[in-house]
Image 1 (cartoon, rainbow, N blue to C red):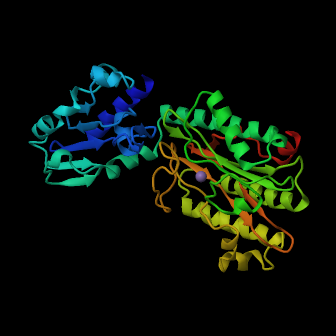
Image 2: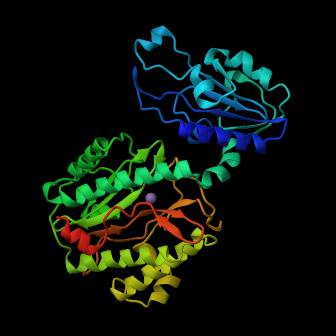
Image 3: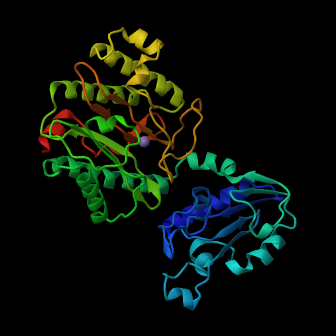
Amino acid sequence: MEQSSTVYLRRLEIQKRLKGDEAVLAYQGPSAIRNNDVHHPFHANRTAYYVTGVNEPNCWTLITKNEQIIWSEPNHPKRLIWEEARIADNYCQEHGFSQWYPIELLATKLPQYLKNISLVHTNAPPPNNLTIPNTKPLHELVEPLRLIKNPDELDAIKTACSISAACHNHILSNRKHYTNERHIEGAFLEKMYHLGVRSSAYPAIVATGSNACILHYTRNDQGINPNDILLIDAGCEYKQYASDITRCFPAKKQFSKQQQAVYEAVLDTQQFVLDQIKPGVTLSQLNIATQKRVSLHLSDLTIINESAQVIYEHKLFQKYFPHGVGHTLGLDVHDIPTKKEQPLTAGMVITIEPGIYIQSHSSFNDIGIRIEDVIHITNNSYENLSQGALKTVSDIEHNY
Ligand SMILES: [Mn+2]
C-alpha cells in the first residue's frame, strides 16, 4: 500500500495542476497477444501507470479537479476460471479512487463526466469514438513530475540496482564456468529470479570480444574465447522501476596489458564525469566532459595518433565513443527524453556510461568497454545507486 498511497498523493498533485474545466484521461493499454490465446506479460503504458500505480490491462482512468475515476475489468466468474482476479471494486478501498466502474460502463459513464470539460490531457485516442474537443498529450503534464523521484521511487530504484549488482557480481565470480554468452544471460536471470524479481528492465546485452562493439547486441549466443573481454549490460525491474548497469571484465582471471589500459581509461573517464555531478550541471556539459576525457585517453594510449585537442575538436573520438554519456532512468530504463541543456536537479536519476569500443586497431583489437552506473542527484552532489557492482581492476581480478 505504500506505493498506492504515494500514487494517491501524486494524483492529488495532478488535480492541483488541473483547471476546473480540464481532465486527465489515461489508458493503460490492452493485454498484448503473443499468439492465439497466449499473452505477453502485461506492461502498462508508463504515462498511465504513473497516474494509476497499478499494472493492470484494459483500464481507463479519468481525473478531474474533484474526482478520480477508474474503469477496469470486473471479476466475472467465467474469466476467473482462466485468469487471476483483477483489482476491480477494490480500486476505491485499496488505491484511493473515488469511483470504480466495470469497463462495460465506459461508453455510457465517461461522456457524463466530460460534459463540462473543455481540455483533456490524454495518452490515447478517445474510446468508443467519443468526440473530445481539445486534447493535449498527457506526457507533457506528467513528465516534469516523473523527472523528480520521490522517496518511494528512489527506494524501488535502489532495490532494483542492488539486485542487479548482486547478479553482476555473481557472474563476475563464476565466470570460469561460462563458455557461451548465453550461459551468462541465463545465470544472470537465474540469480535475479532467485533474488525474487522476474522482469528485466530491458533485454540483456552479453557480448564477448568484438560483439561488445555492437552497441545494441542482443543475440547473446556466441562462444567465449578465454582471451576476450566480456561486456554485460543488464538490469532488473523492481516494483516497475528500472535499473541499468554495465560491467566488463576478462573471461579469464586477469586483463591483458592492452585490455587493462582501455578498461582503466573508461573507469577514469567515468569517475572524472561523476566528480562534476551536482545540481545545475547539464547533461550536455557532462557529455562534453566525457568526450574530452575520452579524447585524452585515446591520445595517451596512441589509439589515435593525434593530440587530445585535435581528437576532441575534430570529433575523432566518435569512432571509439559513438554514444552519449547517459540518460534518465525511472519507470522506463530510458525514462524521460531530457533536454540536454536542462540543469540536473536533486531527485533526478540518470545513468553515467562512458565507453571505448575498438573493433580493429594495430595494437588494440576486439575490445569493447562500457562502465555504467545509476546515479541519483542529491542536494549538492550525487549518490551512486549501483555502487555494489564491483568494478575496480583489483576487485575483478580477485573475484575469480
Ligand atoms: Mn543505459
